[in-house]
Amino acid sequence: MRSLLSDLILQRLTELSDARPGTLNKRVYQALQQAIFDGSIAPGSRLPASRDLAKELDISRNTVLAAYEQLQAEGYIQTRTGSGTFVPADLPKDGVIADKTPLRCAPVRSHVSLSKRGSQLLTRTGVASHQWGAFMPGVPDVTKFPHDIWRKLQNRLSRRLPPEFLTYSRHGGCPQLQHALADYLRIARSVDCTADQILITAGTHQALDLLAKMLCDPGDVAWIEEPSYWGIRNVLTINGVDIQPVPVDENGLNPPDSPPQDRAPKLICVTPSHHYPLGSVMSLARRQKILAIASQQGSWVVEDDYDSEFRYSGSPIPALQGLSSDAPVIYIGTFSKTLYPAMRISYVVLPRPLASRLKIAHSELYRAGNGLTQLTLAEFIREGHYAAHIRRMRLLYGRRRNALIRLIGQELGPEFLCENSNAGLHLILSLPDSIDDVALSAELEQKKILTRPLSAYYLRPAPRRGLLLGYGCVPEEEIETAFRHIVECLRHRLQAGGAIPGADNRVLALQGDLPDPA
Ligand SMILES: Cc1ncc(COP(=O)(O)O)c(C=O)c1O
Image (tube, rainbow, N blue to C red; front, side, top):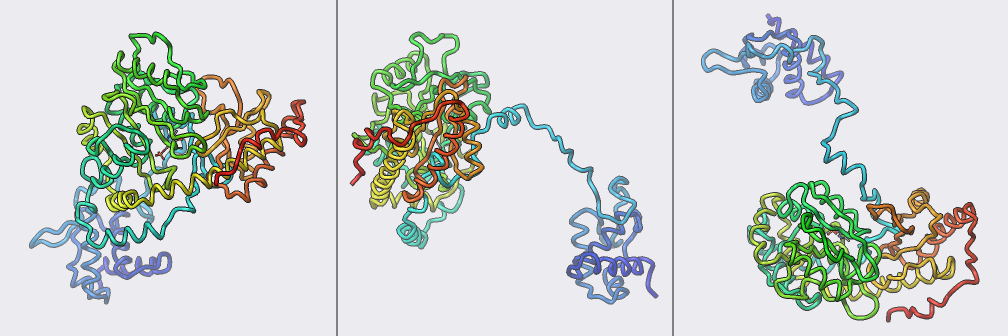
């Protein structure tokens, strides 16, 4: 004779096999769970021994044991040695529901409230939903990455990889990469450093987040460039830092001659080798002025040297960090532009008094890893592949940049080209004040042309309009077609506003100045 419980379980098993096919183990578990949920097996009840239930249900004992084990692990039943298996008497009443559906939670409200910080972050986001295609600024041509060389290096290194490279990273990152970077930065960027000052981070944002957390208290002031990269603005703000925009001119950040003593900045964030997004290079006089202010006021200068490897004429601009020994400069570089952004490897050169504490804080906050990638990258640099890749890419980007400049000249006129454009991965299409660059950029996005409106980089009302056009990730043969979409949308807007650019017979003074890189 079967017990009432066996009958119930059998009935549930049949229902379950129709509704939710699954393994028998799972269905027996679900049938018992439901019976406990809906009170068919009351709190405090004793369950039959596994052997007996298996016999009554005509299934294997292991199946019943597996179901019991799972229910026990989840707290639905308890086994008391010598007494048997029970449903706990104190199983909460509100955990037992009357109908036969599994436990239901109240639906998550559609208007969940975020923290003030979180809401503030979302009011002014900068990140684009697409990160590839004409004319996405700041994105390199990731399709040219030499995977074959990388793979060979990685295979070789992974054959005898010490365990330290697969566990959590030691403070600061892979020592081989720290050494390779110190050598590279001294030679290529005139950075004054040794390997022990280098901290490897997962991108510039992480580096900035660490600096904000470790060097600023909520309410502390940071000067940022106006206009500036949205990432700096947002990472500092979410850490409670009071960001103050300082105007940029053709010589870079132009700080006040006598900054207020009571609101001295903790951080002065600059892009001296290539201002983002306008492109100016910080003059020597400005560099000296900023270092003097920082020394007087006890500020840290944060130098974001994000893309200075790509300069298409003249010599590379040395880093601000190397201008004076013991300068209060924290230098940040990244492989996002020279290799590919998804690698998420960047680095910080820390002044010696900060180095060991910030490395520990970095491990504490982010639990770094990526050892094999970092080791491979160190070897990639040491064997000269990094320098060779940069050389190749500089030529390629130089050609793309020239092609875009020619088109702007031919189609619109030289006044549409922002003056400081001989470096980096983007240039700025200057627009008349009558053009709403945010609306134009949004319209272009509908046509799958990615641009960024210049005015969005300003914290205060923007004094000028423009579009950032990245040429890094657009093959030369696609530049013209993509650019024509911009011209078409812009012409409509100019016509609507009463100004029609007399494109065809304009310009080309610029063209003569632009020999294609050899
Ligand atoms: C000025 C500037 N700094 C830093 C970064 C971000 O670098 P990372 O990819 O290392 O976070 C960007 C990315 O576009 C940038 O434009």
